[in-house]
Image (cartoon, rainbow, N blue to C red):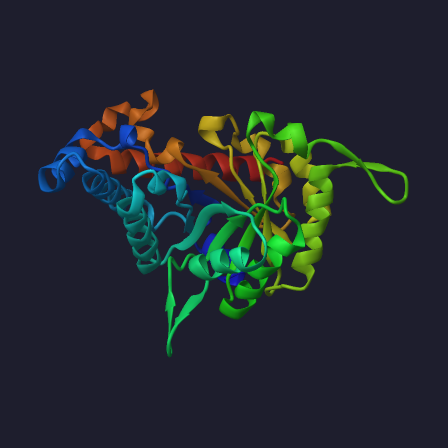
Length: 313
């Protein structure tokens, strides 16, 4: 799957992943009204509104970007109906030729980790038959429990030729409370915890190589460009998923060190900066009715920003 992601990035010229992180406050009123007219102001109605919203955005941007990243929490808040909308979204994006990164941030051990891996990336055995659950192409994983939590995912990735993005240095302001802590190493030197996790990602990835890059990647926030530069050296063969662009403050100039000299090695996420673009002053002229066109314009602007930054590094 990492080979396909690289190929899609090269085809589109856009190292961009659109975060499908819908909140009802982003969904235009006419979409909500249509869903509520059929299902009422209920969990099912909310889930239908989310699905209709996602579908229009995907239709508008699927030829521009290689991948999407639905955040499962935004769907789980609506219960079973929300999870059905999540599954419909994943399936539809795959039908449109997009690589799907399930932002699930799972982190557990043993049979629990195996079940998460099977449910999101693999197939579950039911009698003589095997079925895919959500069937994403990549998922995000929290490594806090160590190799016991990650290895079950790696096993399923090998079987299904899929991939992982492991949290290394996240974009949120309080990430440093743990991730930046200095840890004394065996040789007496000190390193920040995020760098030790990055070294472990590189180690896991060395045994899981695609043609050029490993299918074990890392999550490193755009809001910490200097740390991204250091981690790029630590993980030269790992693709880096970079959240924090746009609404969280990251911009193209912050991203250059996340990429290798070949112009690859990173994919940058923007969520509400794209899916809720019509609510921004810059794109307000599109109006609610044309929200998907505003999202398309935001993708094109992001693509130009990143391309300019890479050309001038």
